[in-house]
Length: 384
Image 1 (cartoon, one colour):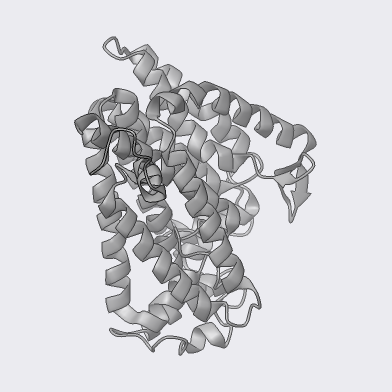
Image 2: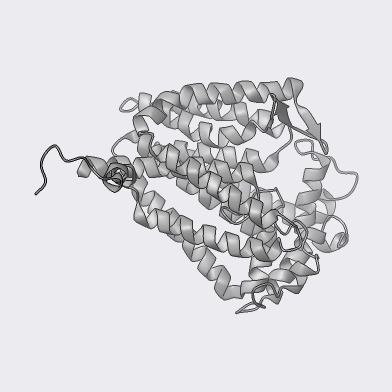
């Protein structure tokens, strides 16, 4: 017979920590992590410690996810402005004192070398969600203009490094918050139409626009080459077009069922460049085929749908905006990576979430998912 003075056992003591975790979201992440480990074992087989390090990065990201999930959304709201200000100051530090590697100045030495732009992938949606929460019930056009300015400052600093891939992800995370906050379709449709017309004109005028003596002004030469290579990779099949051509060959050679685990010839004969990082999707497609790709896409879709459901059920405007942006960030990661490897988007250096090798990106994903889990927990605990 138990009494009020009985001491709880260790399991009872730690149970509240796990209470409220969203099961479907955890399942989706575990499935993606499992596929990532399987794929990394194959593609990293000739890369020494890549598989071991990838597993370590996953465990570290899981620990970060677990810790961030314990932080209630109210605390996340409180750190939004300091995190954003810190991120912008660090970007200014990169502009003034940054380390340059391979023509890009993206890193800052602060005892340890860091890449501040990664912080903005989290700080940007946090900051804009804080702003719209503060303006809830009294939103005006000026508030959206201020949000656009808050987004533009770090985006311009990151683009100058130059880092087009990270700029795309930071801008996307901010635009998602602005869209969910209620931006009018009258302001959304015109830029989309202009962009669509621009793409059509670029495709039609490709011989003229991609001539060697043409300067695009707004893009650096290597960025211009990436776009032109996307339009016609066969112009430089052993140079700029090599990545795209080999990626498409690997995807096509996988067929319906794939060549089998560790049987990918394009992968293991090292025709696929960056096969453990940006182009791991090509290696996955070769070994697991169309069925494997459809399964991978289904998991990503499930994760995105579940994340949007969490956003819809969130108790505050801040939580809804943040959850929606973080969820669609994962969609952008996956869409851009699959698109660039498949030859429908320029190569911009965006990893495939939970599958590609990379410690910084994995930690960033862990923080984002931890915040999403925190929002899901807050809703469940309020209902219980």
